[in-house]
Length: 234
Image (tube, rainbow, N blue to C red):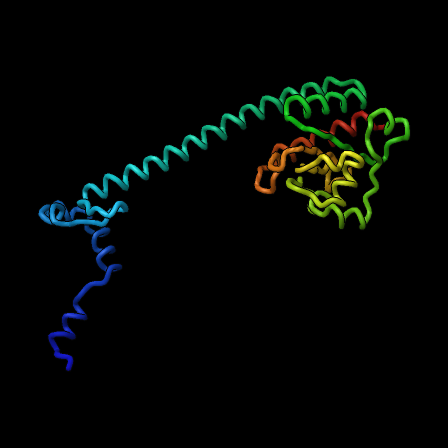
């Protein structure tokens, strides 16, 4: 039989959420109840009980290590971005210095292979003459519905695509070199690839992956669009 005293006790007992909220609202609670700090014991992962203060120190150390790790990661990313920016700047200068389409594309290939560690490079460009295609080593590009279905990300969404591609996609982009490619970056040149496609292939599976940033690749596509207009106008 439940007594009124038992009911009152159940009602008055705070739950974990209420205790947690109380301690947040009264951060100085243990200043006036320091005897509790010596009495409280918390389970440790090793199985040994530790005091609240020891546990707080442990938590702070773990948080500190996590913050240090994140900071180091941010510093490394910043350094890599700085190096990437420098390489991009030099490549832009060399592309601008080229006096012909072939010279510009030679400079592009040189930078992609030597500075950006590309294994295979394929250019698909629309509207070039047979002579220009032969001299530049580019493939003629005709964008139709079939091709949009094959490469929807660069041609329909207008975004670079990174990662492992289907065999049919690799065969179109890299022709007889497709078998060697493990990961790829496909860059639309101009709006939705109207100016062409640049495909950069790697023999490394994780060299290009769907999680990597594509800002640099988008900038490269915009740069090539302007440069191609300059060298193919007229």
